[in-house]
Image 1 (cartoon, rainbow, N blue to C red):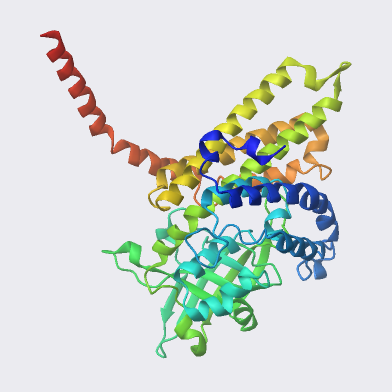
Image 2: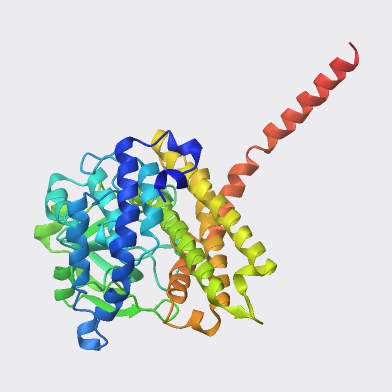
Amino acid sequence: MSVKDEIPAVFLEKISPRGLEAIQKTKDFVNDYCLPADEIYFNQISTDPARRWKEIPPIIETLKAKAKELGLWNMFLSKHYKEGPQYTNLEYGLMARYLGRSHTGPEATNTNAPDTGNMELFAKYGTPYHKDKYLKPLLNGKIRSAFLMTEKGTSSSNALNISTSAIKNKQGNYVLNGVKWFASGAGDPRCAVWLIMCKTSSNEDKPYRNHTLFIVDAKRALSSGKAKLIRPLSVMGYDDAPHGHCEIEFNDYEIPSDEMPNVVMAGEGRGFELIQSRLGPGRIHHCMRAIGTGEFALLKIAHRANHRLIFGKPMSQRESFLYKYAQSRIDLERCFLLVLNAAHKIDISNAKAAQREIAMSKIETPRTVSDILDWGIQVFGAEGVSQDTELARMYALNRTLRIADGPDEAHLAQLARNEFKKFNDIDTYFENFETNQKKLSKL
């Protein structure tokens, strides 16, 4: 089926011919190369603990070469950035929909988190030094990066709680102390740079100016012995090797003096501004990939139902199954439209102006897709929770999205507060309604 037939009509006219061609290429690339490569990728990951975190499955470089050949590379970096291929967020969102069906799809096209968000920060705020040392090799897929924000034992959904400190010593060098965890990508042997959110001051009058984003050479930090990769954390039993979600400890790690002029991104005290800039589009990327995951799950569910006999009758012919399937389609379409609307709002304004639309997408999409995946596991029975289907792994990864980049509760609270601000306007609306009603009754 042509992607043209799968795009809501209201958004189709907003997509350029070049964008439409790239969306079609993405769909074909995922179906023809990435999905068949997923099993090969997992089989190529070593089970030897000594090698598991040191080797990259060779199939990924094969896929990356093919993606470059097709021009499917760095599509996430929108028209706001000269370093990108100049697609809109809406156009890339529709590409991410297909990339989300495959585990290898995002890395194969260099659109994988956390590198996407980190590259956006380097493109927007980086100095010529940062762009040459980190952005260029990241854009070329030669190195990987990690974002260190979440902290152990801390409610990191409120970033004011982040306490890993970076304090200047007598020599004027920053010294880092604290523990970060769920640092995605930090386990990858290609990881060359960490972006670290640290507390640099304690000004009660300006709490949102107390944090700073640091750019740290990962390999140099680890070689010092003062920064330690404690362990990779598992997500519902999956360690995501060789990518990893790691716990990292800083014990008086002093940033070397020769790095000092280049370690602070955009200036001290601008950490909050930078993480909000990073997280807005990133949430849309996650949601669009989740849509793809949900669609792929429904394909697997339908295929299973066609071949699973329940008392002599295929499951796909039973009304209870058909009703649930139809409702799942409706639920997923609702999320799809929410996300596309948010992406378009970012394109015509910016992430801050699209805060309401982003929040709605971020809240609704992961939980809807989780419900679909949970039902898919039930349809498959015992096989659904095993490694013989993709559903269990997809469920584990998708479930984290209800926590990552802000938990549901945080987004709901912010959305509710913003909606509450409109209540006075609603009172005024009905007061005017009553006034006009009285005027009409006297005519």
